[in-house]
Length: 301
Ligand SMILES: [Zn+2]
View 1 (cartoon, rainbow, N blue to C red):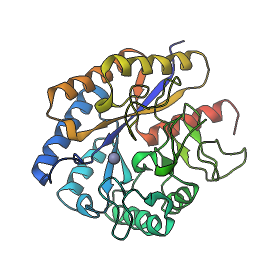
View 2 (view 1 turned 30 degrees about the vertical axis):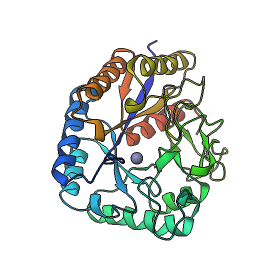
View 3 (view 1 turned 180 degrees about the vertical axis):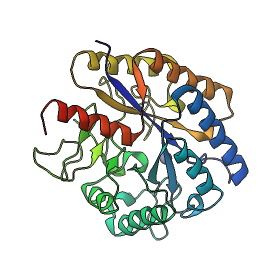
View 4 (view 1 turned 135 degrees about the vertical axis):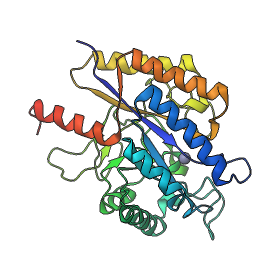
């Protein structure tokens, strides 16, 4: 039987965090380039983040970006709420180096407000993903309260407690998350659990190549290379072959490198490699549907 493997492409739409301000036209050009590559090489299925952060609280929740999101959704993509509270400078009144993800009094109104704003535009978020893989049980409760059922922050093996990332021992394929320990599956009978889709990992070493960026042991287009990303995919396929259950994992690529041939070629390289080696590209919503169907078919509720 061919391996049953599904890949969610996380598209991180952050502007380049280290460069100067980029105007709307240059960002939309990069977004458009990514959109075309994904349409041609992945059928358009992807999880596009909509960024909010201290220096761009509302920018991506207004035209022309909302028009772009609407077109993407029309083409079958999912939208993902992506607060980067620390990357773009700490919020006013916070110490540099502090971790805002632990501050639920800050995060709660932000998550609820942004989810409501997009719902009001007819563009509800399908999923949530924190910056630096930051996530807490308290954030999980608010994400659910905001009507979002899927979470994408998990990178198994990563433990950066100063960024609220605690994913040691997390499952290597999609799971319903415990409300109290995000890196563990929900207990049987636990209702309303968030559906988590972890980043594809080779399970050999956590990303230690660079500070606060997962590297060659995951599939991350900007901080790895094609042979390394292909090896991670091979590890996922091998796991799929060893179990009757589907493997559901994610990768990440950033729009800020679009227009640079090296990164575009690397991205099309890994997408084609996945497609040629048993992978199917799905949105987070479709991934959950597949997971639920499988579970129902196997009689596990
Ligand atoms: Zn980001």
